Image 1 (cartoon, rainbow, N blue to C red):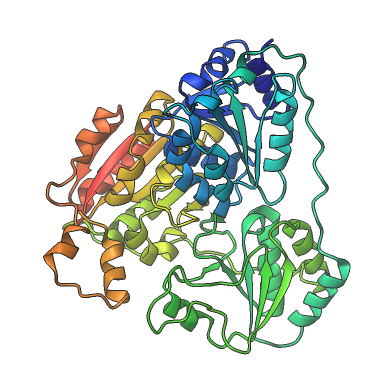
Image 2 (tube, helix red, strand yellow; image 1 turned 135 degrees about the vertical axis):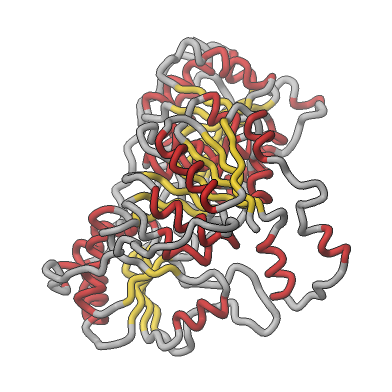
Length: 516
């Protein structure tokens, strides 16, 4: 057994059994070991940002880490933006990054780089193996670091000789530290605060937006009159008809300020105080109203499920009726051209039960978030860190984690081009993912931002940086070229027919939605 086999077997022993990768020469012994360790499922991505984003999506839906396999510093660097998004999502990931053999390092070969320096800004734990005899133990440590609450990025650097040299053992999984709990005094204090007849917002994130914890939060809000709110870009939330209604914090800072106006108390449940995404001239960055009291029920690393359960007991809220989302029944005409609202209406009408929706439509979907929420019960995944090019890879990883569930990706054409290679992996793995590309021929959200920052908006040079219509992208050709059945829809009726057809079939599909 060599170091690579010890590493893989140790990962599997720690319940990491999927590896998204894009390997190079320094990782070839790891690649060869995949045939000896068949419990590890390898998934090839054609660009490293697909690999890291897929690991993010897998972690969000599987609730455990996948491994990534990346080639030296440049390979890691290619995947940094989606590791940034994954870190903002608190997704557990174990990165395996190949390095030159230790005997080769002194020659400063062309691919030599400061791998640890690349890794640190997006990693909570970084280590470089020094021996094949310890690489299995290093893997177990990496998995434990990744699984530390609320979920972390662990990066293990693997010099080539530690992969090819002889190894002695497979490391057993390491025990996890018990999840930190909110103190009983904290539960009692927050319960007292909720009885104080103040205009209160419960800002919830993470596991508090899922399952029994979400129901408990809804009952607490109903019992105490608090307003239940989630971050603008919560990593994962259970939505849909009959599920607990949660208001979403608006994206634009001044709208969020108005949304929170009059709030006298903010209670954080696994969340941080709200701030605007960007700074703007004469607009606030800190969104909590002046004079609003901020209290913490749970910090992100603490157990929000247990805390909400205890708080529900403390406020005697078990018999309260939580506010739930009502099914959308509004009729609309299918005549005419296609726009973002009609896409939301059609997706809402035909989304199947227990689907997963991954949203990176940005300007095309933000206004219709509430409408989309009235679909059949589903999980909703968001772009957490703001680095576009996330949700097609996230969908890919979610498809590996949940092969029995239909996945719908809503994405703008500009965002989709960042990680278009995701489609190839979806085709290769035959994942049940339908990608809806909003073809608005530009970075429309940036047109809004250009005005919001007070910059001049009428220059041809500026517009040349924001438009995608010279030439226009041909998404049917792109999708088909990457192995995905693709169609174009330029009317409401055509889009509905394409979407209904995609919902009725398994396997990857792409719909290019031409917006009028």
